[in-house]
Image (tube, rainbow, N blue to C red; front, side, top):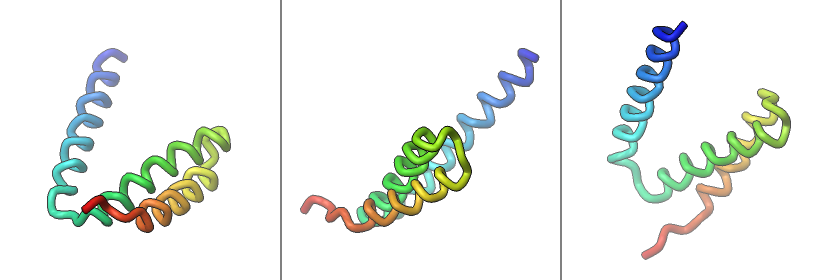
Length: 73
C-alpha cells in the first residue's frame, strides 16, 4: 500500500511539473483562462460535493471569467 501511495504522489508531481512547463509559451490571457478554469473546477467540485457536472460547469464558468480578465500593462 505504501508503494502505491508513493507511486501516485510521484506521478502527480511529474504531471504538475509538465503542466507548468506547458504554460511557458502562453499569452497572459491564455494563462488567465487556464487559471480561471482550474479555480472554477475546484470551486464547482466543492460546492456540488464532487459532482462531475458541477466540476465541469465550474471549469467552464471560471475559464470564461479568466478569459475576460484584462492582464495588467
